[in-house]
Length: 228
Image (cartoon, rainbow, N blue to C red):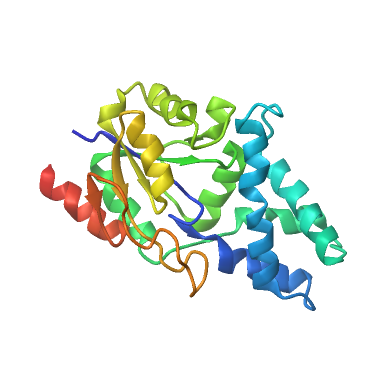
């Protein structure tokens, strides 16, 4: 039985690309905002990889985002007048249209929480902005490491005092689900086919044996309600 659902956030719950581009356009009106947002996000995984591989101690994602912003600004020759304000764009990401209603339904019978690489502070402020009704904030900061390292998923289960098989990981990214499944969690794939824009080529379809595949959170809630 699924007692708790934990969620990838960036891409699965919220539209980071359009939201970050909106803030970039407001602060840097002469810049190609979507290209800048995409380049900023492209620094995300390499920055975390150095920590996952042991080349650097744990650094909260807020700080990595700021370092990555500086990298992209330097590469593009852009001067950012207020780095901290633009970095806070990651706390102002719009949810996909089905998310708030779907989470509300899922929350009726399950514990719901993020399992994000975002820090507790970032996830808390984002939840307030996007009206995400989490029961608590979980994720990378608990484990002092980054997904898809097993420690992150297992730390979430341990914090809830639940065995992994009673927890379901929900994500739009197959690699996230492969890692969670290897830790014994149940899995749900909800694709976000425009996360990376109209030309997206990754994570359009499930590539694993996931417990549930649903087009949105409302359908996911219906699946779980039918099993109750």
